[in-house]
Length: 258
Image 1 (cartoon, rainbow, N blue to C red):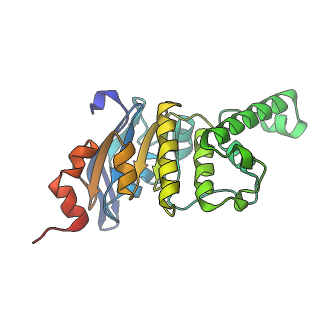
Image 2 (cartoon, one colour; image 1 turned 120 degrees about the vertical axis):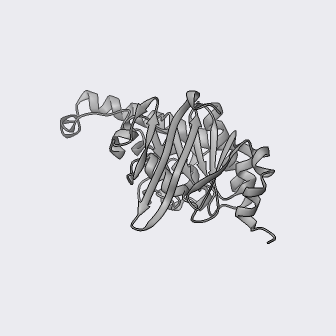
Image 3 (cartoon, rainbow, N blue to C red; image 1 turned 90 degrees about the vertical axis):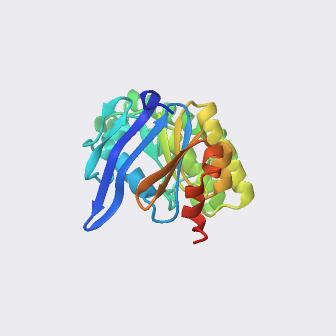
């Protein structure tokens, strides 16, 4: 992968928490239109890097570029408006809202209206709400939840709540989606289905995907490029085949014979 074709560029990122160096000189690229995985053992710094990319924590040093714009010191909500969204390790759905309403919350950045429109229920308000609802139904159909649109989100089984979270994330038509362990808690059948949905997000919607995941079968089956972190440093980059054959990666996960 060339940094010149990357949609997202993280250059020489350092993050310190007191005396602990969580990330040390990390450089990471995500090419436009690709699925780029970020893997490593527990505590390697994967979620910390996602937090830096999305503006949830500041880097001590280094830069973040998205669509060739330096976002290193830009607030998280501005990064979202630029077309960057993420999911979290812990499932985050509005359990007492309907499935449809959950997904609609992901589209309001795109189909927005003013406070006055909302108070006075103007024609603009109704037009935007209709557009938002239509977009949400389309994305529910995309992930296979069109029949459950009216149910309370809490009534969905866990695997379908994960799909709901994906539908909400793509409803605003972002350019980049960062997925933090989306297969956590899923069985093998659900994980296979999730992989198909993530691949379709890239293939059919043209959304660039950054995937943090521990399920290596999923990572190897859908990723174009993989970056491996260990103790806050990049130890390998390459295709799934390259990574599978990298002895340093094997030792990071399994330990060396010594």
